[in-house]
Image 1 (cartoon, protein in one colour):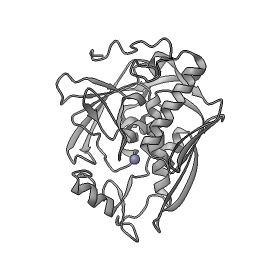
Image 2 (cartoon, helix red, strand yellow):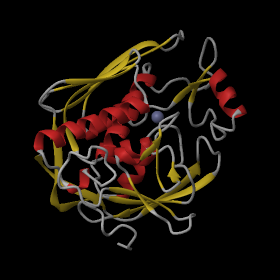
Image 3 (spheres, rainbow, N blue to C red):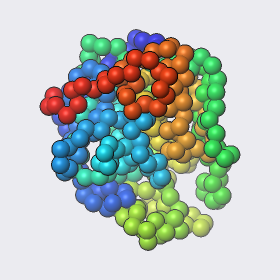
Image 4 (cartoon, rainbow, N blue to C red):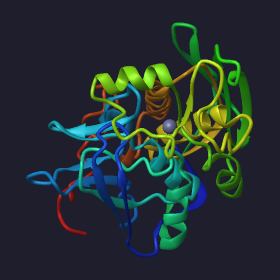
Length: 315
Ligand SMILES: [Zn+2]
């Protein structure tokens, strides 16, 4: 496990916002609090008895259909990926997220409102370095014809290919090198997207109840329903890079490597970050506590112990 030159950061002060959940349609408030070094990102549902803290971690993911959801003992926080992407994109490592419902507000369907919230909060360097995983050997994870490849590189590079049989989407491809300014400008503003027939089907199933043209790009058979059109001509693939970054952020570490995704989604993103951590752990024979909670799968990883003994105590 390489130590990066970067320091860990938390936010300068507490901030809050509110909005509807994409799938529940319920209005929820969300508050972000500064947190100590090595705390990571933890969620707390203050509307639940006992308010169990839920650590943002790849092995805490309980659902990847439509969005990334984490949970512990049946208490779930859904649709965390855009907030997670904003935190990683803005270089924030340690934050307590309190949320008053089962889903993070979808806001405008992008990560830009969370970038604004984090900008309002400010950022404070902490006296601890950010751990980092550097890819040294290529590998690939697959699911049907979808795959994600890891390759060695000097920085964190994401490459994404999507292919939807729609006249305004089709095949889109993008390469992006991690950079906070470019994240704000090129990635954070890309909105989630969906197809009208899927939205109608989901709503019959009681999902996407908060979905509207104010928080998603929606396509019908030929065109886009949003009067304002796209924010970028290739907004869809940019949003996939945003989702990928958010799902990688669950690793809680800096990443150095080139990650090439082809027609992937939240499920494959999650399998990929788990594979990356498992390989790193096997190569090092040990792993920092913040990466290896006891619920992590492989029993072969030595030194596993509860890295979060302070969970549940006030800061
Ligand atoms: Zn998304």
